[in-house]
Image 1 (cartoon, rainbow, N blue to C red):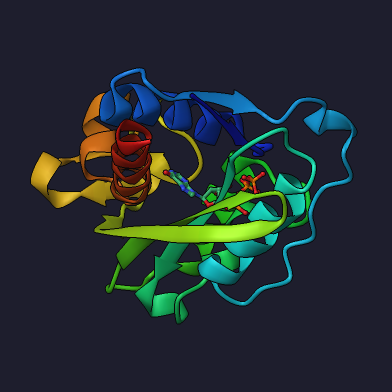
Image 2 (tube, rainbow, N blue to C red):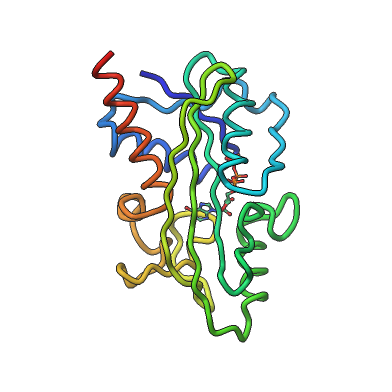
Length: 200
Ligand code: ITT
């Protein structure tokens, strides 16, 4: 079975494919929506991850030849009142790089003792402009004072996960997926789909 996705983030796409492999044993193949590059990007005007995930899933599923999911995710830092939150991708500006976002995060946390944070992910599954279900996950960690590791993407070099004694950029994609916000949300989604696919 093919499950379409619509993401402009290469790091997310790699993790979507790994999740399909890990959680659906290859029975579900994740494909990028054909011609995504030519479709005007979906506006993300929601104030929660769930609202934005649903907005993206409804928008792109109207243009998909089958079932599609979209995902909204980000980092919530307690000392910053939950920021960058839904603005995680554009924290340092509309076309911000991961490096610029990480630099800004370190600046804002300079001298602050409480570095606790969490990643949140909501995946929304839709078909033909109709929402089917959402799935969510979250993982707690803390923000280091300088980056460590070269794996992952986004804020991973700064996101220290206590049980691993390492940042998400210092562990394999498989280890990150086993505990991450995205891993939790996508595990539920793929298991739910795989169960339905078996029944059908
Ligand atoms: P799409 O909307 O096209 O899928 P995006 O990158 O704009 O891609 P979001 O609006 O959901 O997606 O923003 C997610 C941002 O949150 C992402 O760009 C990272 O900065 C951060 N983020 C989310 N999950 C992450 C992870 O697993 N590791 C590191 N950073 C993450």
